Amino acid sequence: MKEEFYITNIDGIYILIFSLLIGIEIIKNVPAILHTPLMSGANAISGIILIGGIIQILSLENTDYFNMICSSLAILLATINVAGGFFVTHRMLSMFAPKNK
Amino acid sequence: METVINSAYLYAAVSFILGLKFMGTPSKAKRGNFIAAIGMIAAIVATVLIITKMPSKTANIVFLVSALLIGTIIGKQMSNKVEMTGMPQLVSLFNALGGISAFIISLNEVFINIYEPTNNIFKLVVVSGIILGGASFTGSIVAYYKLSGKFTKPKSRVIKRAAKMLFVTLFILSVDLLLLNNSTWEYGSIIVLIAIGSLIYGVLFSLPIGGADMPVLISLLNAVTGVATIFSGIVFQNPIMVMGGVLVGATGVFLTIQMCKAMNRSLKNVLFGSSQTVRIDDHESAIEIQQTSSVELSSILAFSKNVAIIPGYGMAVSQAQQTCYELHKKLIAKGVNVNYIIHPVAGRMPGHMNVLLAEANIDYKYIKEMDEVNDVMERFDVALIIGANDVVNPLAEDDPDSVIYGMPIIKAYKAKHVVVMKRGMSKGYSGIRNTLFEKTNCKIFFGDANDSLQKIIDELKAI
Image (tube, rainbow over the protein chains, first blue to last red):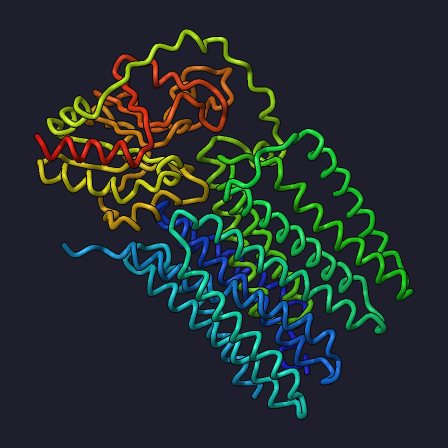
């Protein structure tokens, strides 16, 4: 089932390098006032690890409860990271919104 | 189905990039966060869709969906509850969760496939994921406790040495693993040893890093989690994980470098440097300071034209941001110009002070960065320093022997009057005296920042 999004090594290297360059380029000019939201937003994106957990849990035998519990624990924790990260960034950025007097 | 999944991943990749891009502009930042979040949801939903290919996996789906739901609810709760002053702790905590998730997933992947033949690339990648995930987890937990003020700085010499030894051990174990032909028993136990070692390493790595260096540590741990995600992405041959991991890693590294620059220290110096060599100051007794009262201070403020407020960690501690805004409004009403000057490393994480001021509803148009105003500092009649110390210490410019020499500071001393609000004569994080306090134009107002500001507001009402 992994074949579906199989990426070849060379694809992988391209992805790695290009996203690195893009990453550097887009955050280069972030002003200091947005450093915290940027960090917590990026932090939320790092919860993308949960995709790995999903692939893992779906590849397990449906009787392999021990590994299923491990994977779902990992998914649970990563989901907290993702959801919490985006919500808290949203809360923060709502405060940054220009004030109408 | 493949097409759906792949398009969703493509969509997610584009939205992460656009999201981060928008997050760099104050007016678009909120939309950026939203775009990134939608991208994330798309990626998750698409991945769950793999199930349509596989029959009779009800149990897996039950586990998966409940984990997703419970996680979302807990995450939402945590983000709603947090005080803005507690933001650094929360970010570290979330980072710890990402780290341990990478750790568990990589470790689990090893044991699921333990009877299958592996190649060295797989081993290397999966072990890197375990080490970085584990170290990021415990490192962030230590950072969390430090930020909550539950740990003080322990003897760092011993810890640093132990950390070095452990690092070498981990390296040897990893090499050992590569040389190993698949003897399952040995393979598994070495992986477990490495896993335990990485958890301990995270603790040893974070422990000796002190309070004011926290912004660097948090950014770095963030980057580490990102890199751990890259390795997991390679294990699962999943492009969006690699991409997301790289973006996070880049952001983390960028912020780490920015923070180091703001302190004029190298990353190596922050992480491994010995701030132990602080000289004991013998000037202690010679310090002569002038105190001020709320009456005097409020009249100085009321008759000024330009006031600069320089906040620091002390403001976060006493939760003075709301009161500060009250004062701000009072002064504006009296025709005084108020600006905030924020040092890049003020507080405990990048941009910490900005978040506090935003919470208090202070519009960011009043907020200046250090470089914008340092050259025109003279035009400020009053520089009001609330709970900042090292970032305004002129020793950084005057004394080549000082530990903070070379660190860019806010040149508060150039203002006509300098007023420092602090609790007592305790030193800043770096443990050195602050020559600003001895200047003739500097007055000190002792007391809790919040109470002090309140007193001034009360006095201003009378004027």
